[in-house]
Length: 300
Image (cartoon, rainbow, N blue to C red; front, side, top):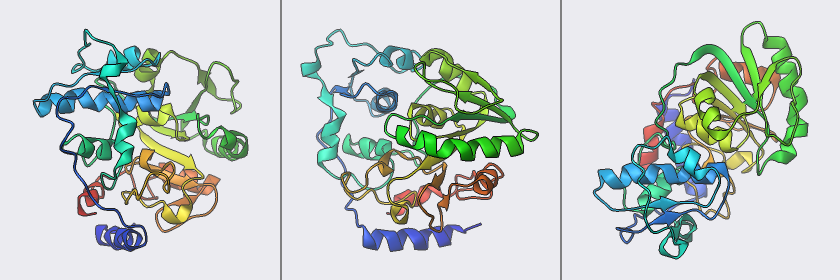
């Protein structure tokens, strides 16, 4: 297990190679916000604005035309619908990408850009009480931007499930246009509201960068995320984002999660394999299901 000083040394090294200048927004005092994407994950990024705005005594509204918006906001007790839903009065979150608001997850950069304080554990805001069932694993190996990985990783996940079905209870979920990928386990297809209530009951999540990854983060599900980007030599979390064009995908990955890469490994990120999936569930891979590394984001 790496110590905090070990991680600090690694982050300093990666920061020298890919430096980031920290900025803090000062102009977004009373703006309304929307998201041009209809994706579930992007809609979830709006969820932290109502509680942050209230905590900072700022008047802000959020809105999205996505079909996921209203179901997601039904779990947000800080959300208030605006009487004016004219999108011309809303600022797209994409404008925050025009400047570099420092290190960390996109939610942390988003808060800095709006002049809010950041949470060292980034996650969307979903207010739902749930009871987790021990040794339960939800699998979702579909993703809007990572669908090309599904066919590649399915045999590995299948072998892992077959070898560990006595120790863990595996369940798969997938979208309504597809079929199950993993054989001989339970599966379900649910609406967003039902999905949120269901996901919160799992102890673990194995999947891609997807809407389910963001829901799992919001509900504190221990997550193992499989990715092939950014290149593994840049995947150090919590780490500098650099500019968003250069670090494709990294700003959406949560530092509290375990990450397995398809194309190699570094000190903190191991390559996808049956063995490393088991090590991750057992808490033997960084960040070891611990949160005491997260405040390192404040140093970079």
